[in-house]
Amino acid sequence: MSFKFHLPLLLLGFIFSLTYSQPLLGQIGPNLGQTDHWMKSAKAAIERSDYETANSIFRNLIDSGQPLPEEMPYLFAETLFQLKQYDNSANFLNKYLELTGFTGDYYKGAQELQQRLDGPLKEIKECQLCDRRGYRYKTCFTCEGKRQIEQDCNYCKAKGVVGCSRCNGSGMITKVNIFKIVEYFECERCAGKGRLTCPVCEGSLKEVSSCRTCSGSGKLSSEELCDHVAEEAHEHK
Image 1: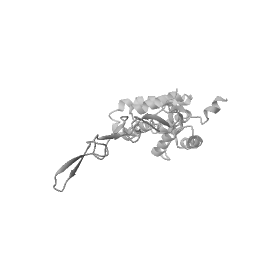
Image 2: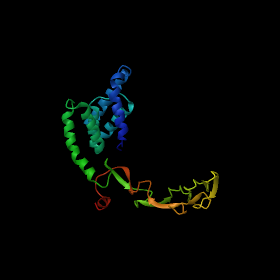
Image 3: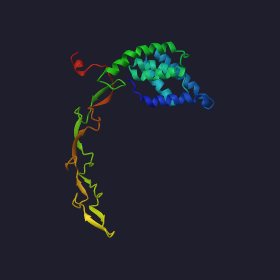
Image 4: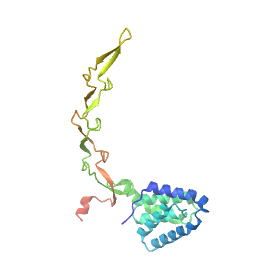
């Protein structure tokens, strides 16, 4: 079972670790052995093509908050590529090149990985079946793909009435006469009730509008990596 990462959080943790690794060396010196152990274990997993294990180790390393070796984002990017998490792979690869430039030990490998990523990333960009990260869309469970649905009226919050804007819900209008005396009159707009029938649902409490669950798209992202093949094609295989 592959891990699906929340990439912004992972990158944030990764950047934090690199930024503060030098000042903290004296404080967490004893834990550097754990980092070294994790890196060796991850490399060994990669060598035997056990990318699921390497994936798990790298995630634990980032979550630990320990200083991260500069080669770690490249190795993680390679691991993610093998797990077909191409968007994640590209992000960590770019971070590796940003940090090491031309001087990184894996610069040549990084260039080769960039070339290998070109095709899959292009497929993701052109595919209508998945989001920009390459995860397949699923039909919205609320509107069942219809995009619009009858739901509680958002304008009146399913109350069927709204406050009268002319009298601010008081039912009364005030006027100052020529003698500067305040006079009170019943609001003609709401007949003194202070409220009006909702103009959207007309008192039914319901409205047909864009589904709020999927924002009117009819689809939601899933945990499934997309192979860019329509379900109908899968069924006829």
